[in-house]
Length: 545
Image 1 (cartoon, rainbow, N blue to C red):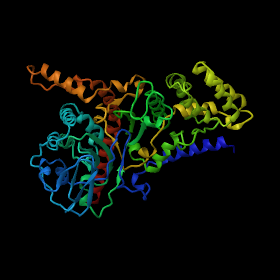
Image 2 (image 1 turned 60 degrees about the horizontal axis):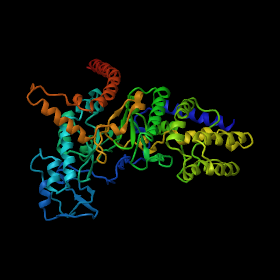
Image 3 (image 1 turned 180 degrees about the vertical axis):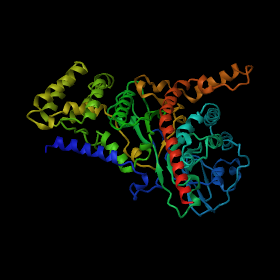
Image 4 (image 1 turned 45 degrees about the vertical axis):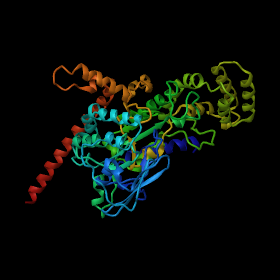
């Protein structure tokens, strides 16, 4: 059997594994450490440690009284740690924070005097900057008036068919103090809203559904605390394209390099829907430099970690370290899925890579391209030509294609090299661990990116070509719009205005509502199955009486 045939067989084996591996995640790798912290870091400059706090300890972080303690000292610029020696279950916890420290020997936890005290008033007491106070004040207004709690709850409760599903879901909050609080969970929509208004988090992450309510896990010391379900998620970060981007780097993006995200959405969405048959997929802008994908079908949520790994392996094409020049090695006869992807990358390559990235403009950039070619004679010839040439990028690319394809029959390493280069420069780059591990958290839709102030809004994959990250509304813009609307309606009917429909976030609710609509059929079927099971159980019970 030749190498190409073997590679195709391997891909087909992966497909069979995925189809047959939708068991409960409790069958996943038992060596996985479910208490390890895995937080999506695509847009965060902060590094957070693990923290599992009880209610009193969380209140302490927010308490205006805390600064009055003799053991509380304000510091500037010196990284310190907040340590709690909890009197309940004696579990030691720590919070990394650069602004203050607390004597670890002090186990008394001041209780916040009023449950209604918000994080905004907390920041004022801690003497935070005017910019931070303004951000928190606006964030509180946003959570009160514009966060789509109803739709958000409908999504994560999946119609509340299983009454324990939402209450067993993990959330994490990042507070303005940079304290990162894991294992939060809420009984219902109201409790979620109440806590978001109470803590006013600058960042929200969503985790798995656990066998025990995350915020009650301390009560069950003899029971293994483990994730049982989570959406299949993907994280595509623009910084993974920094070796190719010439327009921006790091956290910066523009309309040119955003095309990499457009390509990623098109390729991955097609694979998920056509190759795997998933129907309920939510794409979300991360707020700065990337996109997140949530696959929400019931069978996707029940996938084991090995099945998730197989799906990622099926999609993944670009492999190798930063020091490795050639990172794509595809067989001559492409799997049908990769043939579909090839149509997409070839469509975008000329405009994106040759024109917008202009990889032939500087020697530094085209040297990276030449390093991929495993033929010194061709590299030397092209390098000499390009150093003095004023020809267009398209002309230079044709030069490379002609040289490589002219020798590929004599040198097997050159076979399909031009095609593989196109894939390497344009194909999606995934964060492997985000997709595989059930205990990994991912930034929530509709939270505000603290760096850019932009909302993490849904993206319609059908119209992803039209999505412009630079036009996504910011927190400040929404608050200004809200202020105008409230002034205009102050003397009008007391009927509550739907601010979601009246501000610039409205257009981004359309793809979210479209996604929720797609879930309705599956939720309806789940209700029917649940009712039938309940009736059958009742019938079986009556027979035994």
